[in-house]
Image (cartoon, rainbow, N blue to C red; front, side):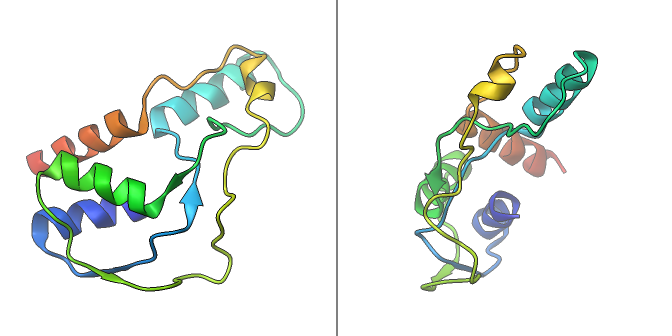
Amino acid sequence: HLIPTLIRSCLDGEKMSLALNPVHDFVDVEDFTDGLILLSQQEARGVFELGRGVSFSNLEVLNMVQSACRKRANVELVDRLRSYDNNSWRCRDPKAALEYGWKPKKTLEDSIREMVEAYERS
């Protein structure tokens, strides 16, 4: 929910609370579904993490969203929003899905730009 909320904050002025330090490994929904379809078609068995193995902090995401929106978000900075947030959320084994031929195509910046464009059209 972070990115859509940040977009609304930038474009509509919606106030939101934000902790800058938590990190996440973001994957575009199209890349994620492509990965699920590929693994299914190849009848892959096991547990797979579909991710890049790279994490972005909320601060980095905030900066990307503000750049794409060309406006500043209306954020109230807080130390922590959820007890389970941490600084190590990322795909720990991206190689497993890569061995089946899956690779994310979109960068986080591309995904954010597309989301901003779609929001502006709605």
